[in-house]
Length: 250
Length: 184
Image (cartoon, rainbow over all chains, first blue to last red; front, side, top):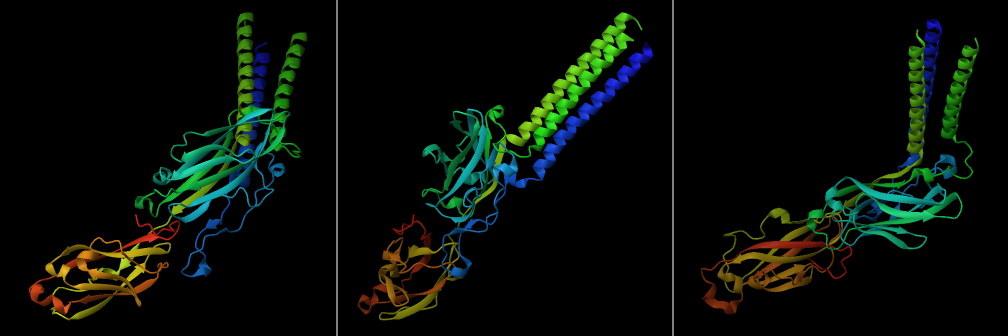
């Protein structure tokens, strides 16, 4: 009897270890997938600028340009929340220099959100450095579909996040267009000369259980991993039950 | 092993199994949430420009004891201004800390090329806003200006033993978003 119990204990420990290892492997897989998809959740769009033209000699010209590194499409990313890459002029990060009082720059962002019926999108503009300028510069967030101004005011006064509620009648994916305008008011004084502000824009959802895999998702690796892990767990439970029954029969 | 001990052991094992299942589900949910819930656009960079102007490298336009002014005498001095800003600027010249009786006697003329931007006494140029440059100064442009000191002959001896000292100042402001040439 003792031998049977010991054997059972050993088996249980092995199975539990395997299950845990599987789940840890699943988590590591997620992290690896995230690390190998820098365009998915961390969109770095370099070489976009507004500033003096090198060919213009001493007469600086204001223009917006630069190479755009297109973000992968939502279908490629398999994300419920992703940047839409249908228009290469959108979703670029700001890289603005030589701003003077009265200057204002706008970028458009289009986000694909796959959700059930209602979802609350939270936007934040978090300063990396240069919080001094955050106290002088204004930010304006507009939902372009309706023209609704979601926030307008100092970056420093934005608080934790700006909430935007979305809804549709049936589960699916919405393209949500936003305009972000950053400006330096004419009242800004000399103390703000030669300063730099780096912002991180973040879109999150308040209740991620409302998110669903995007339509047309052809290769949801993560979901497969989770399903496989769950199946393994179920198999292990059933196997335990069968063994227990067999032991009782014997 | 007694039946009670065996039962207790079984309960422990079952409890551990349930705990493992619950933890695994939590782990799976966390992994799912990690991948699905956040979208970030990083490195949005904003830098402000600067306005900086150099006037004659800080060297005085006219030094103490350099000239002994007499009625009818004219002294012409050149100096430069250089735009070290990151944008084109408007500029204006003025005197500060003016002292000495010659301040009301000497007639000054400030010229940008052939264009006269100010005529009057040193006292009138003190903290004046009237001596505004004719055209904007481009980035890194260096421009030579002229100041003419003239002692009117009709002043006679009233300026004898008198002097004049002043600080020559230049104020610059960016042309961008400033169609009215507002200096402050």
